[in-house]
Length: 275
Length: 312
Picture (cartoon, each protein chain N blue to C red):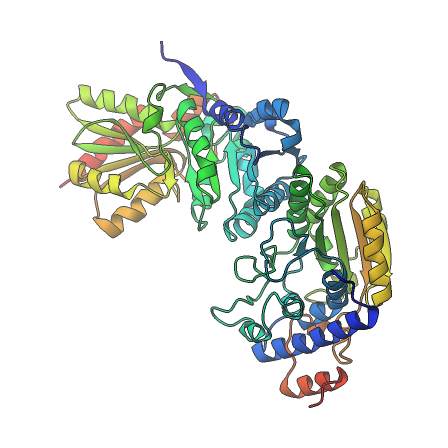
């Protein structure tokens, strides 16, 4: 596929941000904060790197993308719509009975979703299984996993981190959305995680720290991941929860709360939508 | 003399025999020597994935493999599978991925390791999960046959095997063993004893003892707890009109629970349960444990007498 330019990726992310706000507003529920912090990375990955076929979502040799922080589903759905896996009108089914856009991303419901998430600490292990499967088949496909930073408090993440390094899975690539906020409060308050890059290094991973909202940084980091082939690689992306909407930025209240009618209008205005 | 073998060896044999299917992969959590996946590892190391002592990770690595078209068989002690229950629930059962989990060393029959190793609730918890097939075979042959039928299911499963040897029942009778079909091992019309696993053998002994007392009992090996063979139970209700269930498992939620749930909705029938009575075990030899827990053939005989008093 042809690479998208940096401005094109940024425009794609802006459009996704609009849909994240609309979806959570429509449902009056959901998780806008973590969707807005992850979305630049998702756009760069899908727009520029992942070998996937929107018209053939179950193509067996596709790269896998596992959104372990599955509550940040509005971001994923907006992205899948932008990519053409689902239609824009499918976004209206978010959190609606019978809708393909379930509250948390679900591989049984939504085309283009590779993992049924919703319970934290599970996606890395699943991605590890996908990476081993790829290696057993001598395939070039990679498994990409997006973790939340609060999620790193789950012990099972570190079981998986240890196993991935042990098995020298160079085809396993991980992003940590380091937005510093979890459900109840800032991570620093809930459970301090100290030196996150050092933890991954000590588990045997290649580690890079970037600005998770700089499209240039993200695109470079994806290329850097490709250059690591003998061990798993993790990018710690420093992000801002609620990025792009002034009153949501760095605000724990918007981890799991929808914008009101008035807040939606404000948000859309900030995103350059004529209202 | 009766030939003896452990059901866990049936699991190990099945893995080896299925190995020609290159989609079969085996996952271990540092207990392959005990669950008997070690034979597969020796012959097919490239398709054996060591997950260290990390059961939660193991279940989801298996799920990832299954989502990529492989047929993973993961095993550890029954009790330690329970640590990964939510992984089994959310990561395997919910997306209906064909991951096959085997919990060895199930029940108090496991013996001297004591209560921390004696799973008495595994059948109950896995039975609550939609999509999951739950089995507890009683001999080495049926364990092998049932395990080899799992790849065709295309859905997840949990199989409990036992550590210690039990009499071999199905040599030359392999064709009778099918997932979801209970097997009538002894015919009688006064009472039906529905058993699984180790307790099938106690049930057969009980039937022989009852015969000497002038009571004729049907004995069923209900190796598949879910889906339950309700057609067979229907016929037992009609034929015998009294039921005793027997399992080396809590009386809450296992085979007895499954049968009771069914018959109350179908046709309430006098029923007694032989099982672990809401308590933990302790260290002891397998046979001593069955005695202590009230799971021996004479306990089954007593419960048959009780249930017959209530039979209309």
